[in-house]
Length: 197
Image 1: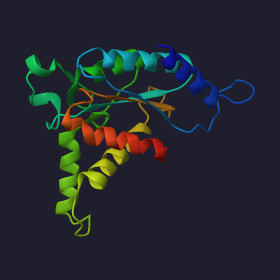
Image 2: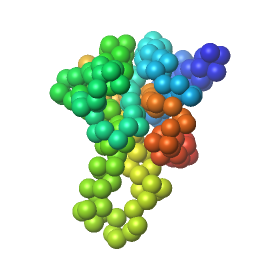
Image 3: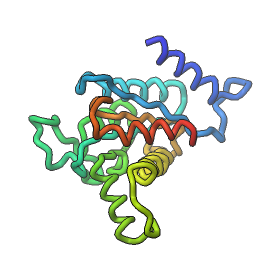
Image 4: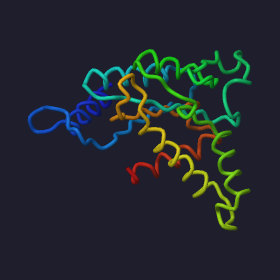
């Protein structure tokens, strides 16, 4: 669409120096792909295609897939309900979209590139059990949303291409539909993330 094209033009302009060359010290840029009221309408292929365009512009893309289900990973989910599982090089079982990201963008992702509500809550509960929250009442905002933001930021800077270069652009796909209640912590975290980066 026209808004995507303008985003990519703006992205290229902000990443370039005055002589047209890509800057050495570039701030990380984030592109978020979300759906509307339907799931399975091609967000993954769209995110992968954006990655190809970013790569053609001379930048290094990476990708994160957020799945709002409570499972920790896709390994135990029925393929009839969620589709096929894609196994990454590190052995982690993930959503098939990560396979599209790897093939389209020519990157090698890890289990950290796949975020689920199960992973997030597991992290929050482990921190609570270890006393990391210093006795505070653990809540969705700020504890869960902060964990989401920290995980996204941490993963986005990890090299994923064969040259071991730091990524310039992180494409984040928020799976499912925006109306699902389990998506709400991710939507809120990404809303807050705009002001943080």
